[in-house]
Image 1 (cartoon, rainbow, N blue to C red):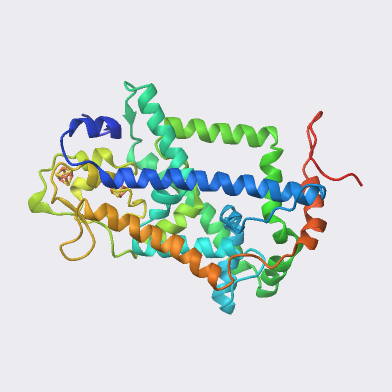
Image 2: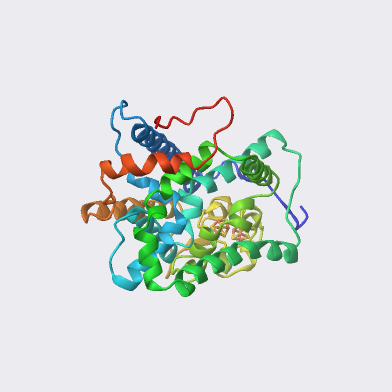
Length: 363
Ligand code: SF4
Ligand code: SF4
């Protein structure tokens, strides 16, 4: 197989039929599915919450605090506020909590958020697997290294822009004003309105991104996501990384062909790259049980590695969320009366197409 071609993970697995089941991949995909369903449940509940604020005749629905996970900018603002004051803001606390947990997980186990929890990462992966099923003969070419590097620049530029604006250019008073201000209080509602009434340009961009993920493996995560760029940079400090044991390795390159982030695992002693998502596809693809390990010392091997990775990810995210809830840093401090006042104008800012109703109350 040419160096610029990669095997589809399914084909790779078939080639090694009879070996122990790739448990890391199974566990990871089960968690991805759970997270996508969880996000859908949160999205539906948030839509019902907004509808109940628009129409008081509907039964009152509580705002799901997990919606803060859809607000990465509010999360960055909250992170700076927390670093400066030691307090989490009371308007979108869950946004900052979820960002902090993503950074903590990256500090421990590479950018595991992307491969284990992110619903967009899961969608990206599903599209790529769908392509492999629908068009098994399409070769999955890798871009030349220089072009791949150039295309990675936008996510770091986006991250640099947001980081400069929030951490350097914004005076502390402006940050406080933003956090307490009217925009931040309905940032989640505006986001819903944005997707509920998308412009033609929004639809075209979303369709383009879906198509791109079908043609280029992990296109969004690899080239455009500033959240992934941040977790990737933090992951450089991670002590847990995939390591190759030279004595056990046969240089078959199955690990490199399986790697969705196009890393040359078979040439590396340890995978230090900020692109590694700790997906463990390389470990599952390796025919030698002792050739790829994770962690310091002798390291963990499959199948214990898969369970340990899952336990760590669950502990950081769901343990962290439970702690935030117990400490009162999960639900925001905005009462229902205020929401009844601020939600309708936030939804009305977006134009409604002819023949459609936006469900807002009559004046
Ligand atoms: S680490 Fe495993 S999959 Fe990679 S080259 Fe060595 S033996 Fe092959
Ligand atoms: S090196 Fe292994 S764990 Fe890291 S992204 Fe590639 S396949 Fe996943």
